[in-house]
Image (cartoon, rainbow, N blue to C red):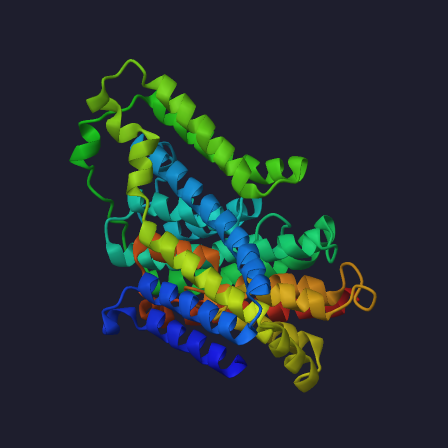
Length: 427
């Protein structure tokens, strides 16, 4: 069963990677892969009750992420419909692409630490559509945004789901993870930024023309500001909601989406239906790229089979026996997170290594947070941020592999070397 499941996942992965040559949408490949993996697993397991319980657990985790993604995308679409991003774009005066790249990279890095890498990627990629007319430029910026979002999310407990898992599990504490991983994460960003800025040279920013659709449905400066502040405020306060209530983040963002919906309806209640149709939440939900949502569902459910069948756990154990050195094992796990989701990899690692042997804030846990959080940037489907950018800008897997993966890999190893040097110097 293990061999068959592994082969099915590899074939599904290849079909996703070769979407354009095969002329088969990646969402179809992900859904077929998930369906076949669960079917084979159920038939081989022979325990229907157990498989259904595991499927329910996986579906619950997947649904939470999907609901969060849908709500975040809807909020961004509402802000965009109200021209809310004009408030931010008006503050950006640079005409050089390289300067803009540095500004976007740092903004994404620190915003991701406050929000999370998924939400930050959605906001920043959407903002780039307002600033850049050339698709090739937007793709380059999207690649850097993915790297910056994952690097920024790795050094705070609320910035990345894997760091959050280690924080909730008691493996790391807030102050220690910030002090230990911040410098490595910053280097992980600076290396790709420096290389990309050098490649861009003195090229100028080509701004998009104003849409005629938006000019026929104007919004006032007050409406734009209210929607922007409230929308971003909802995203910022989701981690606070989680910390105070201990409820999952998707519930907080759904609450915020409802609040934004109510405020928008009250704000436009005097307008006729033709004027406000484009500004409503219903219209925003219709503009969400459901193809990327479906792809996300398929990927998460497919990886869940590898977790329940203990393939990932066996891989972690094999690394422990074969490699032996903790630093190399964690770096390999980080590289593996570019291929499969980092959540089950970290979950398997947390189950393998006992807190009694590796106590709170041990080298293993801090380095795991860095490697698992940033390693997903190496491939476009290696992180939630990458999958979100892939859907928003329809980024081709092979294009990302050619143009961005080497940059992300250079940043990954540079940051890892900095963390190891810093740890050995301080200890």
